[in-house]
Length: 114
Image (tube, rainbow, N blue to C red; front, side, top):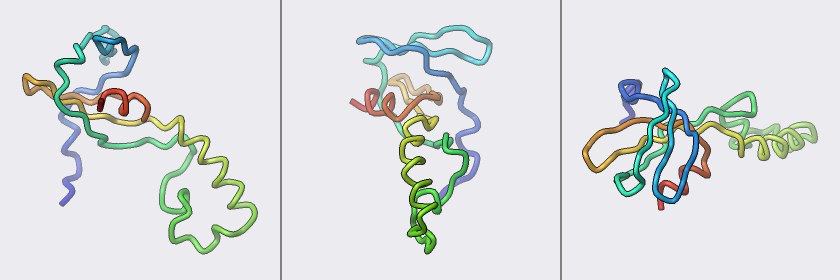
């Protein structure tokens, strides 16, 4: 069962840079924090903010009978390119038990998962 609002208690940090050994993040006050990559135990996607302007099943062409219309077909192709710019909320759990959410891209999630 999904619990609404369970991730609101975690601190949100903005992705700045990723090196071979550390992840640089910016907190709400603008300070830069560094997290060693060997301390990351688990990553999980907790949400996605769509860059295409709207979200829902019609954006992905699922269960949408108007998907075959020429205008919708073109919009779905354009939205596929815009999805690359989606803002992904990544929940990071460290080995010491602390958790926070990183605002980044899907590519960042893939790199952190390795």
